Image 1 (cartoon, helix red, strand yellow):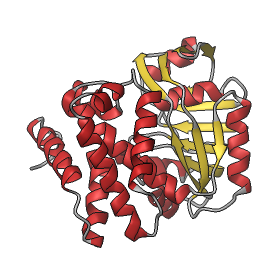
Image 2: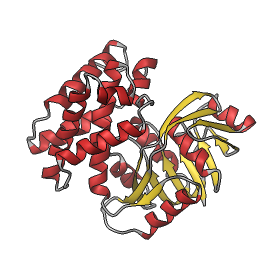
Image 3: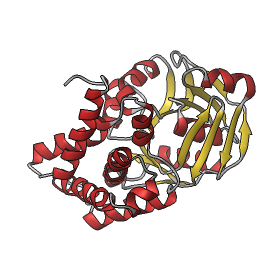
Image 4: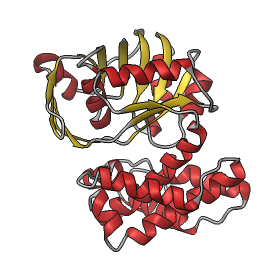
Length: 300
């Protein structure tokens, strides 16, 4: 299968690199990472050890592939969609944080699959990515139900040795992913701790309550995600990626803009629409946004 990975940071490089063991892969990312991959290949280490030679580009316009994987930060979704709209793809699949798929659907002609990825990844330096936890990639129809396209994509992942599955319950899984993101990202970023330490330490209660609040928001949306199930998913991902630092923790540590709006902002918006109280997610959002404002990363 020909695969283009748009947004080859930590997760995109790991997933794209693993896919390159069996498929024709093109990574689209930023220099100096792409330059090093082009010149010397991509080195994967940690829980998985491999060296692969995918194509590496900084311009994702006017390309074609069987599948485009979107792994950018959620706030770059619209830019990714504009670039992908100039190319030709049989399918597009998002592995991003947040609920970004609807924005891709609005901008692109190919069918858009929803996806989740619980692999842990950390970009060590240009050309080197560490797998900090082996999880699973799950893909499926945005509307739910069976999908021959999702089955094909899942098989392609599996052919490359990636734990993968096609799911018929992606609407629920999208909210489950949001619950995991809400539970791990904010608390770990504010405390500057690993995913495992977030759940096992003093922040564990806050993390679990944030996940429960997402489940409460899902219910009036017609999504059957029980609060215990949301917490179970949070604990499972934290356990599987215990040594990893969340993307938001990495962003705050590096002084970069976070995905607070894509994770907590969407929870607050949907909670307001359904009049569901989400005080924990609101507090996490307020503190992280205040930090961004103080760093000059957002307007007051």
